[in-house]
Length: 121
Image (cartoon, rainbow, N blue to C red):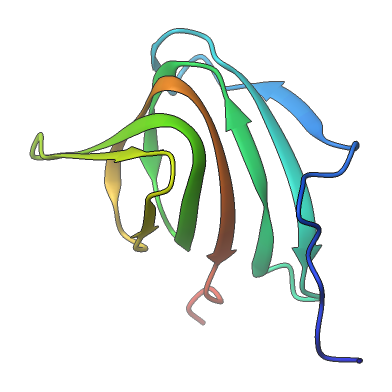
């Protein structure tokens, strides 16, 4: 089927491994892994799997991201200090415009889909 893409039930063997830019780090130096499972031709929509060791860093979302946490515990802290906590099995959306911090409390594994709108002309 040309317009239906099956995603793998588990991450594939190939992934990118990286550490965050020190300027964004608030606590720790977490090793992270990213598996991109699908990306549309425009590069604005993608799905994948992400893994991270504990740590905390700043975020500024221009994209909207759906997440399903498969393992671990994370917290999203907004600029006003509000905290949203998620554990394995939880699903959530981070809307474009969210600014704050992402904290991995216990090593986390998530499936995600994100959409980056086109830049304004």
